[in-house]
Length: 411
Image 1 (cartoon, helix red, strand yellow):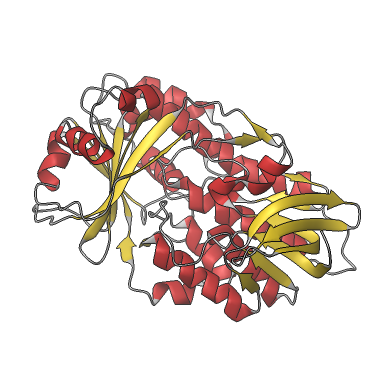
Image 2 (cartoon, rainbow, N blue to C red):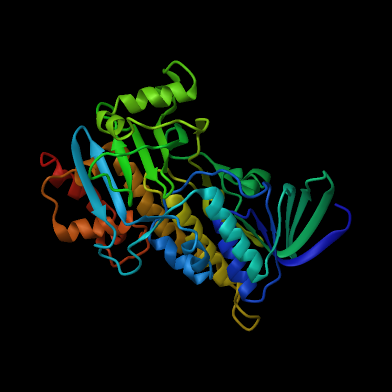
């Protein structure tokens, strides 16, 4: 690899997980270099944050900058299916902590976080693509190519992969494993929403279920500038059976959901409709010799409950906390202190995602007779508090199936 530069911590990717980890490490005095493939700002999805995320932004010293951006406030989630409507207020939840957050254009949001990490002392280098990865007993070496096509290498004491869907280390180190979920495709864009519907709440993400196909759903995430993120998720075969370009298919599917079609009656599709498929992912391990995987680089479930950024920030917080230990502290046990606690929340979300597509969680959400205490427990998980093991639906996942059985016939 030629001459090799040295640093303490190398971070792959300057998205939310990478920026939060880098900011925390830099504030702790660590020498951090972040290698990012893209040039910010750049488009990304995952725009509806969960309140649990606010804790991690605050912990990294980045919350003030995010709050100053004027992003759309978010205080809950609304659901609609075939004329049935319900909503969860994140301020009325079981778990203590933040009850509000933001709905964000990720191009701006990610740039704010990356700039904050740089201001904290992290060395962020854009347009650097990782081509080689070599774990070793005395560190971790990354081979990269910069914007001018020049090859270079950097050796770090430890490497954090926060490359998101790029999944750099899982690809290079053969860590990828098949996902448990079917292959689904999402079509999405930003629209000038033109929403004038009385009673529409811009402070909540709207999740609409297809009135015929319960495993097909739509998101509508309003932003503070009168635009919204709009998307549909369905199994690959369902989308493939439709004729036309992506925009045509998305418009037809919106028309098939009458309530959503009314909400978006005046919408203007001013951006290209994008598509992503097969995004669910797993790995054989979340860590290895002098490296760890953060956020989507390790595992991504599904966009339905906006868990991606929250899991990413939780993983960044755990990893940075372990790497911030002083020399006098015992060596970190990455399985016990990183992978295992992270998986607690991931498995909670996995249970909710599985139950959503089976229809069981939809029965719970749309139940006509929701117990207020149980609703607050469910609300906590929807707000991102998936690591709160005092919540029975985190500590005992099977409770959700039992609850769904009780709710059947009451929707």
